[in-house]
Amino acid sequence: MDRAAIEGVLAEVPHLRAVDAAVLRRLSGAARIVRLERGGALFREGDPCRAFFVVVQGGITLFRPLPDGRIQVLRRLRPGQMFAEAALLTMTSYPVHAEANDAGTEIVEVDGKVFLDAFRSDPRVAAAMVASLSNWLLQLVDRIDELSIANAGARLARHLLRRPAKSTKAGFEVDLGQTKKELAEQLAIAPETFSRLLKKWKDAGWVESDGNRVTILDADALEREGE
Amino acid sequence: MDRAAIEGVLAEVPHLRAVDAAVLRRLSGAARIVRLERGGALFREGDPCRAFFVVVQGGITLFRPLPDGRIQVLRRLRPGQMFAEAALLTMTSYPVHAEANDAGTEIVEVDGKVFLDAFRSDPRVAAAMVASLSNWLLQLVDRIDELSIANAGARLARHLLRRPAKSTKAGFEVDLGQTKKELAEQLAIAPETFSRLLKKWKDAGWVESDGNRVTILDADALEREGE
DNA sequence: CGTCATATTGATGGGCATCAATATATGTGG
DNA sequence: CCACATATATTGATGCCCATCAATATGACG
Image (cartoon, rainbow over all chains, first blue to last red; front, side, top):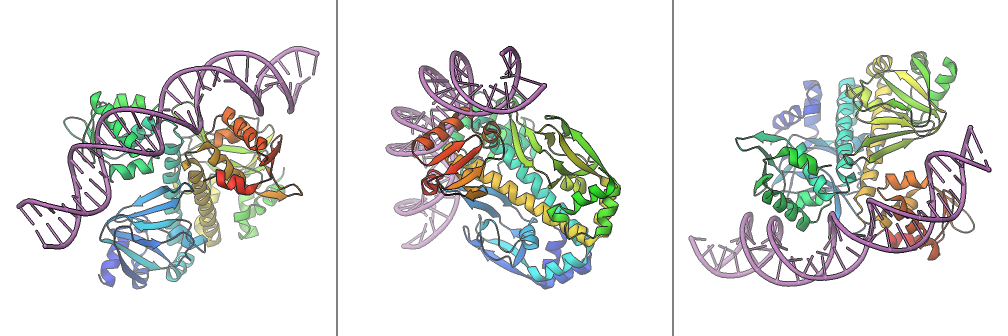
């Protein structure tokens, strides 16, 4: 992947759309491609901030270890998404772990120093960063919302209802976007409980499920479950 | 409270320290004082963003209602802290509720339009915003950490150990900073459970407690509880 | 001192994690 | 392409943590 291709990747990042092409060219000149295997660490909590990143292919999980040995997933990043820019701007070390969750994950790594220069000299970059951080805030608030619901069934129901859905003849088809085990982990539900909930709802005729696709047949019923 | 006094309040906000006095003067000229009774709403989720705020006296709770009727506290703000700037910068309406949690709460309300102008024209304001947003991110990540711990005792133990503590002859004295009921709510623990946990630890000789002050006698024991 | 919020203590039940076993899916090398 | 290995998913049985309901105690405040 050459410089021009990297610039193309950067130009596709939602929050960088408003940034001048000249700046993107400068950033892409200070960028390189990183390839990771599934489970490979991009950086670990406490590592010095040296760069920010954009996912090209595969996916990255940002997480923190919990004292009981489990992990808390903060966000799963998909192609086209930017991350670690906040740490770069205001911290000396990353506050979370970042790992690839797919084989063949590809990341654009943009040098931090060059990026900081751009941030300081270009108000549009600064504005882009504020927009991105703000988006992060909302995501985290949503995650807090999810976790605050004591009821496991309510947590799952709400999550399903908030996912992007494709309308089909039967109902709304939702792609979980990850394995059931991973989603269960993210919602702080035991995989067994997850499975039982889905079965209960299938038996009740509220949902259908095939692999990691769930079709919501009775959204109202799920809505009630989420209360 | 006159314009100069308001400017003094703004100048004391950690993230605005690096901002030019001239800009602060401009902001304070577009500011006013708001007084609230305990429980009084400063704004509600969905209200159009018209201003950002600094707490002068008392306290403000940012929260979201949960479907089960409880609320999720996102943050409690104390004098000198700024909030709602993120919403102002990137959203059209506030994403959370804000209420006074003390009688006689005083807030500086800075007009949003004037602030936006300052943000767009002054890179130092933009940098200040990024720092502030970043701080918010860390706070929320910590809150997620807290909530992700399934064990109620572990949640409380960790919270106590992370609070600013004053070293005394007996151990570390921690001020809960709010009523036990409120803290319990924030940690998603029933007040009864909270009480029982504290009693258990007192009986075990790990802590002392008097009102909303807790003295940690055996931090190691609490540390183990938090795992 | 009375009123109301907060805090404590007890009894009970349900939700959900845990352990265990099996089934299904995914992937790998011969 | 099949056989094997490994990860994921399902289903069952058990126990415990913690929310809930209830009653009383303590504290805050006008």
